[in-house]
Length: 407
Image (tube, rainbow, N blue to C red; front, side):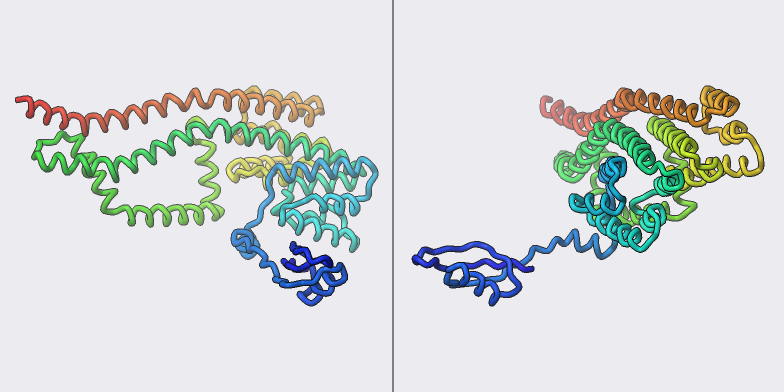
């Protein structure tokens, strides 16, 4: 119901005011009179419209963070373990959820459950919230009667992915900040600083070195064509986003990401850790290898890696050994391939894949900790080169003017 702001007087004539909820101003007036308050003015309080929230709702832009999904998964596991029915568990979680997408999804899941559908089918209706791996694990938990263990495994899996992602973001924060400030500094120098020196050089009719000519031409280009440059950058960004949303474009971009210098190797190992952890969890829960490979390929987060996983699945379908198909992809190091072979021969493939995931995650943690040390020399070289060009381009002509004035 709408909120109303009112002003009035109490029975002893004292002024009172505040806010009250009611169906209409007439209903609010009656309510105030019942409380012994004589209303003087009743004005409906206008609800503030969140434009950003309206746009998200209109274009279906809501998303769920990994922290919110982790919290939901842990709550579900704890409530089911305590013996609470699934519908009651979801209803209880809904009371504390604030994410609009998660609220909408859980309400629909609740309706589906009450109409007789199982949890995995209900969750599959919301791919923006639950991944293929998540849904498959729930399906296995339902079939085996160990749903609380499934949610515990998924919570651990999500938490590990969250920590790896946060570590990578933390490591990239410093170089990203430095590069951003360098770009801003270049823009300020080209637009505001160099034009002032250009007028000075033109007044004194100096013979300028090539460094100064380069700086002046670059500055003139920025000043004269900044609008076109802005439009071109926006158009390039939109075109890039559309291209990587295509199947071929996304595959090539994901391939480029894992082949990028410095950061590409870290991302590749993190995807390998995710693959190994997903495989160990699915296989240990009883999911057949072929089905597990299909599920993992759709939820691993990189189309290039997913293509190799699908290649492994196709090889297994033809009757080839898992170790041979894994070796054919070229994604794994010789040490990891030995672990594959040992796990397949010993029959404890899930344990060995868990060990492989731990191995990759330790390498990612070490690489992330040393990432700044690898990137800092490149940043220093870039900053030094920028300072050198500015010094040679601006201060050398100034030195010539000083010498001329001395003579």
